[in-house]
Image 1 (cartoon, helix red, strand yellow):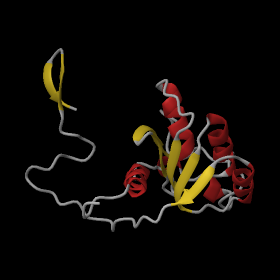
Image 2 (cartoon, helix red, strand yellow; image 1 turned 135 degrees about the vertical axis):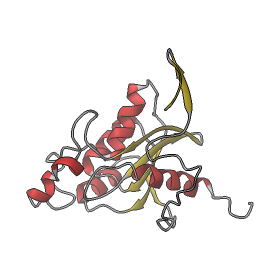
Image 3 (cartoon, helix red, strand yellow; image 1 turned 90 degrees about the horizontal axis):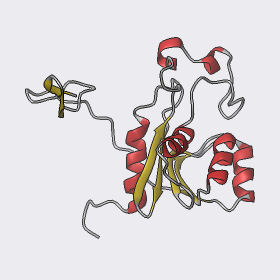
Image 4 (cartoon, one colour; image 1 turned 120 degrees about the vertical axis):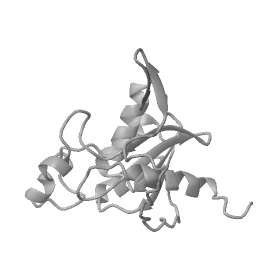
Length: 183
């Protein structure tokens, strides 16, 4: 193996960690990837459904109701990263049967039920999640789980240079009927 070249599990987990940075949850940032044959099929992060206000804007219902992690999953305006990854695959007509999930956190019981029925074969995670029912269902299912020993990079502070692209802009130019514009 070449120096500094990550193994596949570390590579996919690092991408899941980057995906988690899009999270709008005030409690926990979670990222997920669905992978098959070393190809990324879908990604997801936790947050409110498309077009709805995020918890960052309206506050956390779970915090307001003092609900502990791992309980009462239905009392949340957000979707979990795993749910969003499954939905993204379905939305785009991508089959995920036989695929693997890389997630920054062990899936909850609701997500693990969805993953079982979607045909996910393996779940790789970085951090645990306090949901005993999830572990019981994993033990009863044919899903194989594995904890990835990946060291999250330290948070870096972006350096703005004369060539820096403003946040939220890819800097890619696209064309429309009015001519070139920034995306």
